[in-house]
Image (cartoon, rainbow, N blue to C red; front, side, top):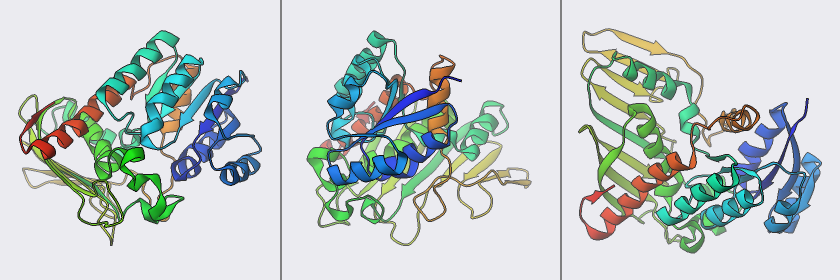
Length: 341
């Protein structure tokens, strides 16, 4: 069997904990190269995986052997590197948020179209079994009309798990562009679009820096969202949940309430209006807590979309729509008005 030859650009925590091991676990993949501007780090990773080491991504992209890449760099480099990779004829899996502006996202989508290569954005929450089951229950009519929701994604902050700690790019506005809202909020924006299977049209948001005095990006955000059909709810993203990670979502429907990732044992609890309760054990959500580094499903799906030549679940267009919610939240916070998406 011919294996897909892959390179990983950026060797920080997300590459080390997700992309590299998951490529290694996939029998259809051969890891060929890694790239990072930190020479010591990239040499160490290259040695561990027995692959080539590059310190310039342009050199890695010149490697004709490589067919696909993961872009795991600081946010401001997502678009330029992804575009360069697509132009070099590589399939691209880009970490989220896919870009720092709508224009950049559109340029990435255009580059994918022009090259005929796949562009996938790494929104792993769509692959969580409880989230997939919730979408299915809503689609089937089991939950009835959806009225409201609340979702949160928060932990103690990237300094606890990123390779550079407090000195890392996550806290530098020039490199990160956005803080907790881009790191965590965009995940939940994408998740809500996926579960509810509809788009949001308006957002009101408070996006603040009030927890980390060493940072110049947001670390706490609370948004109120309204969907096309009139579903309203809240989305919270935070790097200040110091004691325990929260990755929960609650959907309030006409016939039932869905509690997702809100219980230590049951990843989905369905509370029916008639008093019946159904508990589902569907496996753990991926988290940054110890033991939470299980297989995300992102890498396997990306590889499958290439080998079977089909559109990935999170195309560039999908990534752009989820990014649009975050950009509108920033606009709302800055202008103190409700922003249209």
